[in-house]
Image 1 (cartoon, rainbow, N blue to C red):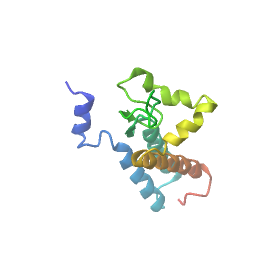
Image 2 (cartoon, helix red, strand yellow):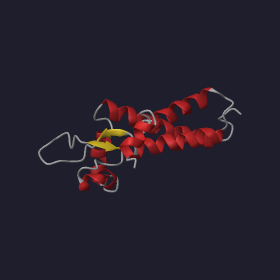
Image 3 (cartoon, rainbow, N blue to C red):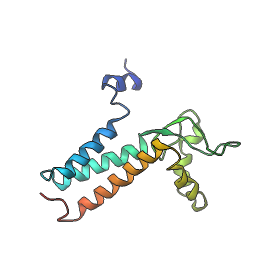
Image 4 (cartoon, rainbow, N blue to C red):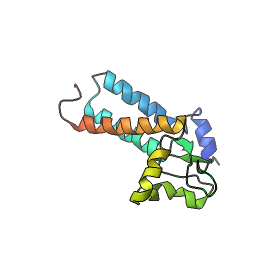
Length: 139
């Protein structure tokens, strides 16, 4: 019986990093003008979803006594670490309360890995929006 860790190894280590591959394909789709807007929109959606929910980043949920927050590994910019149940949805809840939005946004650029994933997520989201505008993607 295979576990999720074994599934990631079965893909040649791509289990955690498939979003990077979709991001690279998205860049190639923009460079190669033969790719239509549907391809760009699909790749943008997949890459954005990976950044928000699956990219390996640090948790960063607020922890008493620590200014930098939880240092456990997490999945995506919007999800917390799986080790502490309360952290799982903590970052997503922060988006609802205005006074905590600033703390969430500062956490998006807390370290190099989070910064890269944040920029990739924003870039792929904007890419999808631009692809929706008729005439922007050359057929």
